[in-house]
Length: 127
Image (cartoon, rainbow, N blue to C red):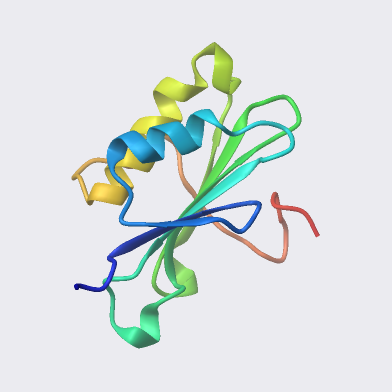
């Protein structure tokens, strides 16, 4: 059996190894104000890099979203806002980002305006 290359987890701590695109879409569709986020962790990186290659999506109170990704060092840590609520067009923006990142599809990040993450100034995931 091969080691998983991707792990998805939710706010409840449930995990799915190597989920299909359909599974990721269902997990995204299940987000709500009680289950606000998904974390996609890349596991097919050198052992010292595990935990430093991920994409996270979190719902805000108004159902807009924040997406964060990191591809190694802190210098490759970015975030973007999805200004439309998930039920009013936000899905068309967020879902291609999740699926594209998970599969390593070229251009997955092009639909959003990314800014470097600054931990001294912001923490959209809460305290």
